[in-house]
Image (cartoon, rainbow, N blue to C red; front, top):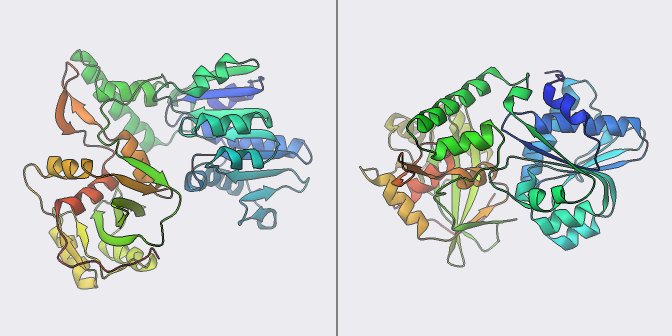
Length: 396
């Protein structure tokens, strides 16, 4: 799709301060506007260096880098000869370059050297110490984020000199896909319904942050017992696998579960919509998943489980009951989890999966039915004991 000159893009082009802070709702066109702006700056200036940063390398690849590639292909500007896949750097003919990186320590951020332009995508997920080390070595800075809570961009950057603030919403993005707008308006309906009942609960707060671009807080997050790790340790033992079925709007998800030093490691292997059962089996083989381990799947789809079993997958349905969701959550809350950096969708869902509330804001002791596709995969494993013992295995 060719670049659309949206209201979001026009507003960002007017920003003049050295440090540009862009707080926006979901689908407001923040990143989709910043990427072309930075590319045009490279075209207009010889030998400048642009660094695009996110929380983790998978987050960079699935976020800003994917948007950059799509923009370049759609505008017929991409040259394979300009792209270095090993360093994730695109070098223009005038020797200006755009590099895509992540930093997990202040030392690495400092050793990254100086740059002309820095763009921190989803800045609220990057620690301030790392961001500060990057900002001080940059002539121009762009930050974008959804403000699910106040963080260092508000308390540090906007209180410093030569900074500028812009708030965007989906109304600023005329290029928003029809299906995305439909989903947003459904969430707005839920938020309005809560407000009519005198309740400022989960959906009301969600709409403040992701619909209106306001500062909020995701209330009553279910899981706080997890942290990310960069790579899977060689000594980690594969002990299980969970799978949740999806198709049109909901993805099919597969999570591998490892044990390491008395902790579980969760590793996202599949998150994709539109898969038939034969497609799932083909993905299973493509990913070279260890089929000696039992895959615990959603027992609400017995026909899918039977068909996948006949295709060759070692699979069984999860144990379900009236309180199976609550039971699985309780089992998961008793553990300490490590989550691989590449588990981008699982990380997003862990941050968003929250308890539902009543009109007074009291917890209903049940989670919202959203942001749970990967979490359900994990929960199926903890709800059910596999019938076969897993061998020691490394991630393929």
